[in-house]
Image (cartoon, helix red, strand yellow):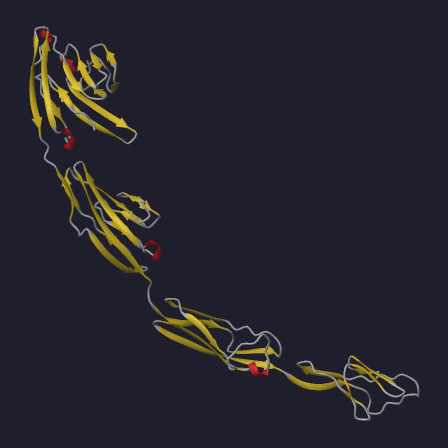
Length: 372
């Protein structure tokens, strides 16, 4: 803290060569009169002396051989890595000391010392600063629940002496100060109210208001919960109401739905099961059903499985003549969905499928759909 020991003579006599003593860490001299020894804004640090002006190692500021033109304002500035503090004093020719903009840290004992070659005299004055620690008018803990899409207002009205500085701290640790936008949707008004524009579920959490002055601190916490707007499950789109698929092909049916909370989608098939490849048994009405805690919706899709019975489109003539001992080929080309199986029946009643069959004197072979 800044040591505020000020020493000032009550009565000044140039003939007695009196000296003024101000105990501070550093002084910035501000000349309100044109004939001061230092130019306006001159700065002196510890262990420095310029003619009649001296700043000692302990921070005491000394004006030797005080003169009329030395009256005016003197600014003491103390700083380190964590901050800065300043104090302005007014020196009058009649020995009066004036401290402007006092705060709680200015309290204490002020001593006026008058000295010359014949001796010294001292007068002590105790300065009391009336101060109040911060208080927050709203309740110190509040639960606030809003629906997504709405904006949130969190009030924090703080009083104290001196007037407290108000800031908000989010659940992520971010410092939110007045008149500062954070993330594009967080803003603190000068009166201490925190505004969150259209928060979502990711903005839910604890927000803490901190009111601080020189004599104390007060805190208030608001727990924000964001509820998604509840809607009934509703099917937005599906495959065509009537879908054709070839026998043995792959069937793909689409169904999308909306709702809050997110709805669950299920399919009900005619055969009560799903298979890798379609068959005639997979034809029928398919039901897409979506549901959440607020309701359900369903839609039917008709599936037609395309299948054709076998039909021979290319075969041998009803009567085929062949020479004895010469090979003959009889073709049989069917059209069918799914693919048909070809079987040849011999005159003796035997059936020949793809493979090889030997008779007593003849070799008969079924190659593809042709009999050879």
